Amino acid sequence: MTRARHPILGLLAAALLGACSPTVEQHGQLLDPVLLAAIRPGVSSKEEVMRLLGSPSASGTFDDRSWYYVTQRVERKSFFQNHLVEQKVVAVRFDERGIVQAVEERGLDHARAIEPVAEATPTRGSELTLVQQFIGNIGRFNRMPGRVEGDY
Image (cartoon, rainbow, N blue to C red; front, top):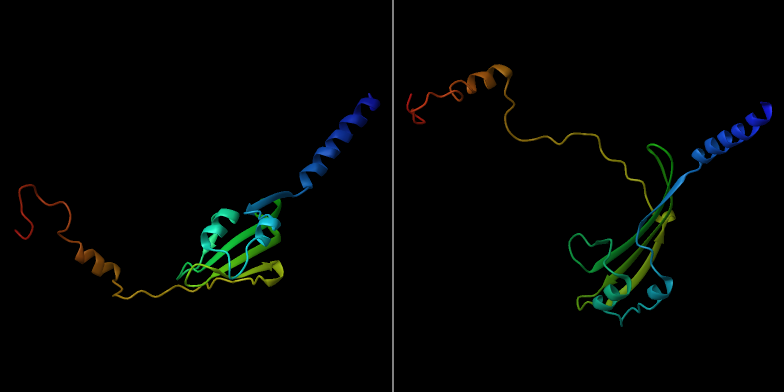
């Protein structure tokens, strides 16, 4: 009986240890370094960049002269515990003619944490009390059939 317990305990221990290993997820586009090196500033066009690298992950907010290709590797150890392990952003900047001006690569060491502001944005208008809301709604509901609006 004791000999049968050892393999079962070993399998149980292996299953528990396997559950502790992180799950690795890859997000974004994996760019081929050879294709990335084929993009030449002053020579390559938007069409050529699109053919070599595909559609960008994002483009400039106010113009389309900057394209961004983003790759992230995230490890998840448990529910809601994501850890960003690696991030690479390739920015391709174009001139007004659509020719590549520059290709820049940035890693996780250039990233900045952004903390959202918890304050609420004020809205314009009057704040009605409960009594004002109640009085304002009198006569707005349950109209009698056959009556026309404004006919009271």
